[in-house]
Each structure stands twice: as structure tokens, then as C-alpha cells.
Image (cartoon, rainbow, N blue to C red; front, side):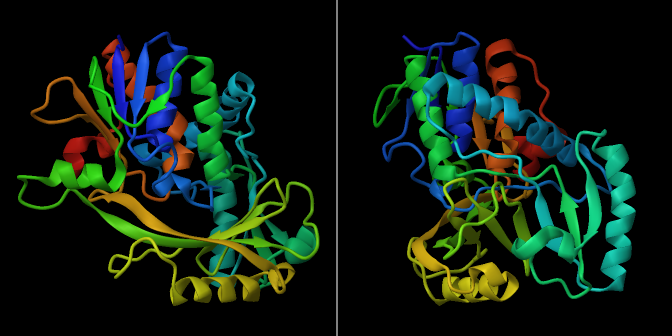
Length: 347
């Protein structure tokens, strides 16, 4: 018998299962499609912070999760023996003009206070970053040491292996036992919307690509954010780029000319990718709640059922925090969910 059923084996479902199992709960995870096959099975894996200003509960929650990530993934890897692809390698961003330069310099000061000395945001000359640097119109770059990379598919595999070590398996079908946490992505948003005057969220299509540079990159090269693109060097030497954000689409699961345009933009921004070979292309739907924040908490009108959904663009970054607060709520009855993250915020 299980104390807890988790429906959905994406990053939220697997992370919650891991924390609950570590706390001694008997857990079962159900997903008819297998682990990491939805939005969590993409390519990019950018764990990047919000801008350090106009501080609020959402930004504080994300900061705590990013700081907890190193320990979280180290424990997962130690338990299951499978690497996750996590690395806190920092991030570089080009600075477009003098106004943006002034903002970046001001944010260096606010980051010292808001990031509590755990990470640095600074402005550096492009030459200091070496050949991996993106093209910057001002010759200056933002460098932060809080951003981290994650290989989404390997991260899901690492969690599955860690759960196996706790005798927790992802199964395609089973009856609910105990409390039920629904971490079912876009299909879950659709189900939660039934009977309500407006949808609680939508699926946003994303497209991404994986490239193999012709020359090895520097060890632990930082991720880049340039021309609204995330460019992520993974530990295996590949580079992920993406992604699009499409609210309307004909085919949610196939790539098209929009991804070709992303690849062209990435090559223009980063000379080191000019002749990189495309090795993989991905398209899928990512769950975006109407509040644009994760939806966490009890399912209204369904006693004993809970929601963990809507981690649009920040799912991997906030997963350690989401797992902690959901385990606190379901196992211990302690509610520490930020108001902006509550299910009611999107109803």
C-alpha cells in the first residue's frame, strides 16, 4: 500500500516523489507515457534567476530553489548513480546599449543585497569571457554566478534511478492510493478547467535544438542568453538552444521553420556555433497557468487531491522548492506555498 500517489512523471512529479520517499513515505508514480516524455523531456535546461530587482515572493522562492539545486541533484545522483547534467556554471548576457549598461551596473548592487552574498551579478568586458562570448554591441557582458545548466532528459533519468533505489517505480497504470498529487502538465490544466468559466492555463508550444560544435568548448562554459535565446553548453559537449514560445500552432509536436530561424539566430550571436552540426530537434507543449506562476496546493472540491502544475519555463529551476513545499503540505499538513503560486490564483 502507498501513502501517496503521484500522477505525472515530469520534473515536478518525479521531484516530489523523491523528496517524499526520502522522508519515509510510501510512494507510487503513475504515468501512461513514462518518465520525462512530456514538456520535461526537452533539450534546453536553463536554470536562470529573475532580474535582481522589484523583489517579491516568486523571486525569493526561485532564489531558494536555485541555491538548493546543487545539494538536491547531488543527493539524487548519489542515490541512483546516474548523472543529471546539473552544473552551476553561470551565465553571460550581451548588453545592447548605454541604457542597458546602466541598468546592469545598478543591478550588480541590488544583487549583492537580494542574493544574500550567495552569487554575483557583475558587468565584464567581452574580451574577459573568451571565444565563447556572445556578440555584444557595447563590448560589455552581464555575468552572473547563480545560473545553472541542466540536461532535462538525464535529470529525469537520474530521478528515476534514485527512486528505484527507494523501491519507487514509475508505472503506466495503477489505482490511486492515499493522497493524490496531479503533476500532469497540459492535460492536467485541461482537466482542471472543466466546468470553469475560463481555462486555468494553456499549452504553449516550444521548439529547441541540440548542436555539436566542431571544436570543444571550454570546460564548464557558462550558458548564454542572447537575442532572447537560451544557449546551454551541456556537460557532454553538446549545446542546446531554444526555445520558441508559440500560443498558436498547427502541430504541437513537430519542428518547423521557426526552429530553423532560432538556429540561425544562435549562430549569428555565437561565432563558436557557426559551423556546429544539428544533432536533435524537439517540439512539445509546456503548461502555462493563467497566473504565469506554478500552481500548487489542494484541488478545489476534491478532498485529498493536490495540484503541482504550470512550471512554464522555470520548472527545473523551482523543482527543489516545489518538491519541498508539496511534501510539507501533503505529508505534514504545513502550508508554506507563496500566495502567487496557489491554485486559486489561476482559477
